[in-house]
Image (cartoon, rainbow, N blue to C red; front, side, top):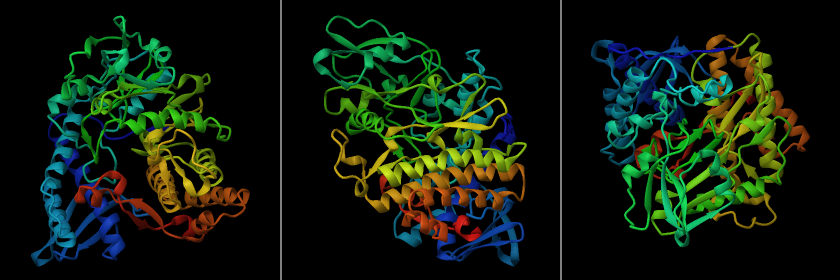
Length: 532
């Protein structure tokens, strides 16, 4: 199996690659969320055309691969139809200005930070391309672990359907030392908090022993904090003692704020007062308590053989309003208990980020969806557990032949419960984890089918042109088998009959400056139903 993408090339090429990536992301969002639902888009030859109806402007971009969901791969610049039927190239900032004008006319809202966020995201990608080391400067010597870390730190371009996927608030000089894409490693900063000002649950101290923490003074407990967070929100209480950086090195993962300690085989999910894409990334109190409560609940909900959960059994924070979110820390269990000799763990998003060449893509895909799809659908429809199995929430275990043999689900912040499928609400689980049936369906369909499976399917099709219809057909057979096993539930019957899939509208929620939980969903074509 090979999985190769664009590599760092200092100089003008980095700026050009970054600008193209930014323009393609904006164009793809515009197609999915505005033009396609409105009927203002078409595929003509080897290009997509769309119309900005309020501006009466026509745009186009050439296709590297057409997708039945409209999740196309683009090539070359986005162009605008000018006077005299001439096409003129637009860079990412010019395209963003056109989109901003169209959305202002469409919604009546003005967003004065939108164009700047797209420029900043583009500039971040250029810096990452130019600054990424050719080799990992801090390898562990364990081939499987190093491959995993590389997969987490390889996502230079980010979410392909977000208008500003690499936008981060703050000065770039402030985040450079903590950027996963730059293959960084650093040590956690540690605070000592008086016993009476500590809140937490679960076996926090036994787990952090593997991190080699500093010793706490008498009457205190240690708390690991992201060093970037400490520079952004320093402790203002004299009782919070700073013990400085210490312990084993940690590696930032794709989410930036979740850190993996290879020597300890432990994940540390920190608070980070930084806006990344849509959200301020900090651990609210209900997310801290919910992680431990859901870990207990999900231990009673079986997953099929070959699929497991990375649990979050402990948290610790400062028991002071305001400070609890600033310094809340969740511990997540590691990878090694799930690994067998010769296996390699990889983040699913890394597989989807570039052409994915395998000897037998149909058999590889059958194994992949055969693991993931039944686990997610049965957890939802039998037990009311909604896993947000998007590309950054699944780790794939490959055997020596590079075939998928097991999968790990992660990030309990994204796990929700379909209240309509529960007899009673479980003790300790915060109400923020409650979903209505329609919310649950939207999240399952988007995260599993549109974000995750369409991404991996597209990567296989990039390496083997023309195979995508066969892969969607195979996926339909797996869904049909799950439906038969579950007694033909209407949710899957609708899916198999061709009811549109849905996609999260990242462009529109960013334009409206709404919280991420308020993001609307837009319909996208359902190739499962069409092919059946």
